[in-house]
Image (cartoon, rainbow, N blue to C red; front, side):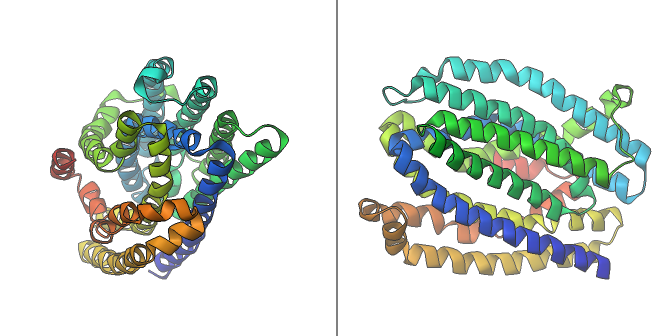
Length: 384
């Protein structure tokens, strides 16, 4: 038990550092990019990420299922099955990449139709999307490698990968903006190099943490992949609903109101993203612990940890969201300038509901542990 608490404390410290870094860089990067690119061009940066978010729902859902099965096998010290799960998932991801390349290529070719692009930015936007999509495909492979960290409850290392990626991206953006004319191409290059760097870092820790895992096409099991996909299918439904909740607004604003309005909205939504990141980080600390308790049949302890998570995270979110909403005007004045103060109600509407909706994220780990993800998937999908 002392070892478990030690791991949780270690995960918590690194997660807090990761959160502070995300807040610090996220809030400073927005006015920095707006200053050098302009508000309309800036709005295209998060828009590029939205397309990968929609396609990424399949991969996130499958990786979530992989982590569940992988963790249980490692907890039971069954490395033979763990290798089969790992190889089935990894080769399955390569198959999904081959399927997604034509879809991503179609998006790049039809960008003028899909989104509103300011005059004179088409070539830069195309390069931004190509590099961002390429980095996304590399990240898919990294996510499978990161299941080793999840299974061994080394979420501190997983966050270090995130920190490394974020720092690499920001350093390259600043470097390129200073040695050449600031452009969307520079942001795309930074996205790609950051994803490649994170992949190398993930590969290193995968080898170090789980040396008993090895790559072999012979260990690919269609039946095992089918089992993973069976659970992943319901999680996909859940993720689609989630994206309809939180990711469709920026795309609609771009199409209906234009790139200028989508840029303004993209800047404000940074606060919404940070609150969701905060809740996800702190809820995620307990996810491998909860699944580990399930694997060991320690259901009382599992219930205790879930209750602990809900109570404390909900209280913190309530204080945080209320503070940001109450001081929305001075925050916007200091952050983006006087012209954004009039949009304080948009920020309040974005932030305040999260105080009541994001505190229960850890309960989803219970559904994953029991492989009972159908009902949450259906409810979230239709609600979205």
